[in-house]
Length: 457
Image 1 (tube, rainbow, N blue to C red):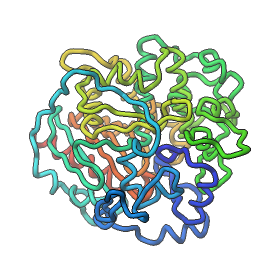
Image 2: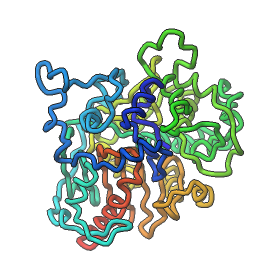
Image 3: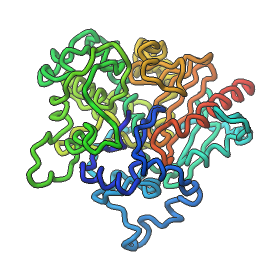
Image 4: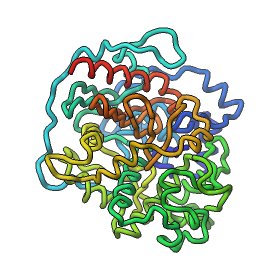
């Protein structure tokens, strides 16, 4: 499962959200959480359309100051409920503490533009459907805030809506995990981290936790056996304790729990055996973030800037949300410009090099593209991702084109099709968190554009 983009709401917030039925969060990877009967009834009501929920149309945070009923604050229990979240996804830095991912001082590397107007009319049939849909229709259906398609490194399609424009940044949600995983795979390929090492030998503070006897590889592939629930419908689930730990706001009177991401990770207990089955739990990525910090002396934000962001010709600084001690949220806190996310995807298509300079070891990319244990992945039961696997915190399709993907709640995506030399970067604010809601449209749409581009070259 994936947490809410910042996952720092207090448990009281969780209960209030459940009562208001605004907490209809689902897994970011195609499995729905258990819902209360009342919440299930609420889900049957159709949400506002993309056009009708446009944040400008609804007037969120417009005015000097905005009207009281149009103000969004991080302390509001519904700051990330739909439709408010269609504004929030572009403005996390206005609401909470962050740390910068510097793009450096050099000039950005311009992307060539070869716009293909025919992409709007590319058609496909949604999974489980019987009526065709066009690419342009899919954008509104998926509440797309911005989408860029690169073909052979050139922009062939670019569109913005909602809260986002070409100069804005947007929450990447669990796409962040894949960025953290890429950094981890780079360090493994370079011999800085031993993938067979037990986590407890690298981070002694985790020796007595569930992570202690797990290997780095098991963390990277999320085959750890952890007693940890991300069932958003359960106000006592572990996710809410973790949320409180990572909350940068002052803790309530009498609070005695963990006060940072790191402190929480020390409390996680083992359940089952490591290496047996894939289990998508965000705390694996934050544990990897700690491993990266301990082995390099640099946070994921600093390392991402040093190794990739400042060297790939990024247009904008990115940033991470942080906890009360400034630890970047390695599992979901990255915010960035859309074209820069596409640049990251292009870097992987190009084998880790840009302008003749190697940024990512080829072995790291090869490892991700090869995919993980399909049998372990199958045990997780992702109905829409049959035949997929997970490696280095990337989702690997194993389709004919060898496509692989970074995925985040509410429709965030970096989709990489090596055979088509295509990258699609998308930011969205779909009212349903789980990608099970958009995958039936997203996956065939992305494949259809790849086939279209291969025919035109």
